[in-house]
Amino acid sequence: MLLVTGGAGFIGANFVLSAIAQTGEPVVNLDKLGYAGNLRNLESLRGDARHLFVRGDIGDRPLVRSLLARHRPRAIVHFAAESHVDRSIHGPAEFIQTNVVGTFSLLEEARAHWSALAGAERAGFRFLQVSTDEVYGSLGAHEAAFTESTPYAPNSPYSASKAGSDHLVRAYHHTYGLPTLTTHCSNNYGPYQFPEKLLPLMIERALAGEPLPVYGDGRNVRDWLYVLDHCTAIREVLARGRVGETYNVGGNCEMRNIDVVKLVCALLDEARPRPSGRYEELIAFVADRPGHDRRYAVDTAKIRGELGWQPAESFETGLRKTVHWYLEHRDWVSEVTSGAYRNWVEANYAVRGAA
Ligand code: NAD
Ligand code: TYD
Image (cartoon, rainbow, N blue to C red; front, side, top):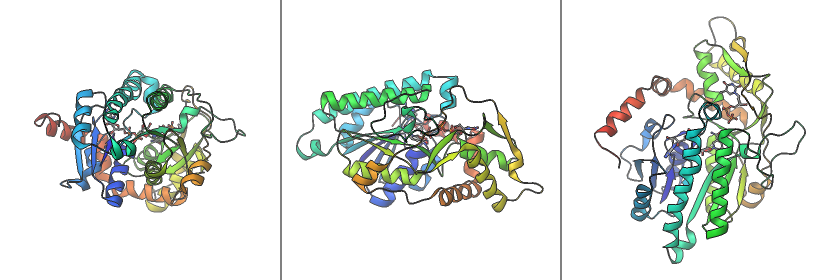
């Protein structure tokens, strides 16, 4: 079985759903249900004995200790984090607390647990850190893509906190021998993404007829990967990645933000035309994000060459799926945006306490 942290969030939920569907392996899912954690994402697993949801904080060491002792997972797949750059600019403290201090606590418990294992259980144990390409900093227009040996140069409180946690993971391998793996993925998109991030935000605002806020000149470049392709990469790294190594993951799909937004508009024009005019007319350039990284690009030769991983979706197919998912899941969107799911969670857990 796997211990997944942050499995009620965007990528974590996609990982839990796809891992159980494809391998049948049981998952213990530890998530504190912060604003981005949503049990509705996991509704299709309700009553499924292969999924045990535990509401709790990765920094709660007695809880993590008891989960490791009780379930003896073969691996910890660590997604739990504060993940939104703009929020990190407004309030960095939470990012340090969860991403750095929380990861430290988790590593300490993982180390204690792993040290007491023996034989095949000890040899097979893994701690997989789900990191980001943002730790490498910002590229100029003509610079080569990030490789696994690109020096860290994080620029936002978010990426600095992820970099800090990556360094701890590295040190726990180097110093204590903890069998770690780290992935650095580019921007994900797909179902269940909280509508504060670029793609769902643009879809939702377009449908509401609201201005589409593009930061700065809109020419910042990101590499995009469909979330389920990220999930298969994590499974491959977990299965066959070399202990102590880091693997870049990306879609080989660099896009300027303005072009991404225009593509979303074109797909909406096709699927849900406005009564008059085109969605593109809603685009509004707004003040830039402070410290806004100009360009990310990821060299994925290592994971492709060593593990044979490659994405199944192109940006065209993945974006179409994503736009249609948001069009078909209006209830999910309205619950997330109204906060109704949070009320439901509070009511549900107030009577149960922590698991
Ligand atoms: P998300 O914000 O949608 O989900 C994060 C989840 O972690 C939420 O369910 C939240 O409740 C949970 N969580 C937060 N703090 C916690 C704590 N202290 N204890 C337990 N649970 C906690 O984020 P996401 O986009 O799914 O990202 C998941 C991971 O992937 C993060 O580590 C992020 O840095 C990394 N990542 C994200 C992207 C991307 O494009 N979204 C790209 C590369 C890497
Ligand atoms: P985001 O989804 O926040 O991911 P990240 O900052 O981690 O890459 O943003 C993706 C890009 O879109 C980033 O360059 C900032 C830009 N952006 C906008 O132009 N407008 C918006 O309203 C948002 C949320 C992001």
